[in-house]
Image (cartoon, rainbow, N blue to C red; front, side, top):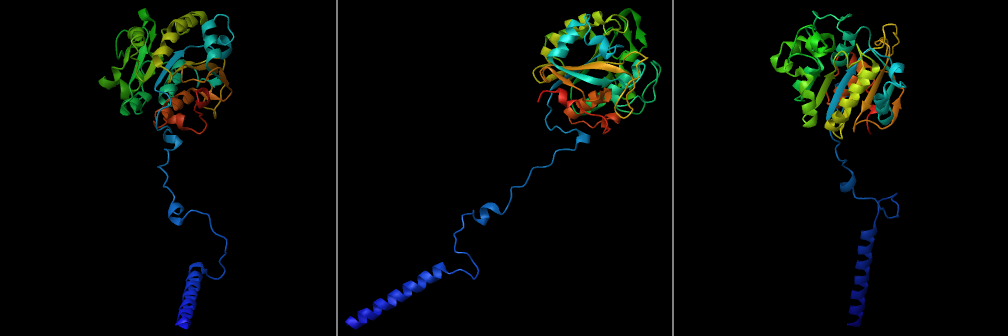
Length: 334
């Protein structure tokens, strides 16, 4: 009986040894060092990436960096006539507080081609301040904004009535050549769109009530824009307008304050030969602007249009889509 018990014990030991051998068996060439990596089910399948952002040519932001944008256009003075001028203390204070494009150029001479460039991306073969000419087959920024459901208003100081299509209104110092949207048939021939072009008499109330649209265009009259009056007169006008305007634009809004052209004798330019209207001032102000910044990047009026279009993911019109046109993003708050 003792022999049987000893035999049974040896059989048990043998079975145990075989079992341990099966548990630790590795194929030839395998290392004996234990692995510490995660199991394949944890790492083998990567998380799929989200859809790519739209290309720059179509406007990059999926969410607008600026929720309100305003453009104010002044007249006929070069960069050096405003910056550093003792007659423009308020404008110079804006340049110290906010962002300045120190290398900004008008598209050409005289006024109208510059205004068309700002809202249409081209001058459309127009080379003078004609009032009987028009742009027949092209969209403007107004058409883009409307199609995208983005609110907009064009405030024209001195214009006698909404959608006024006359050449001028001498009693109110209004000039059609400074009202670019009215030149586009796609706007002027649409009552719904043309109704957005209004006298600036409603501007002060809209600012005070904080009911500005997402995009605001402001053309001062021929005196306040310094076309017929002094730089000091224009500076006084801006000192009365801009503080309330910046508050109404809000913390994520920006004002693009630009001059249309320098004097006719100044044909300096930039940007692949597209701009030859002289060296002028452009300031980006407000909560959405970079503070106390100066940019030396070469910009022109097409850069303002591109910046606005890119902000809202709109297609870039005409020369705004040129690789030689830089968006003014270095003047915006990070």
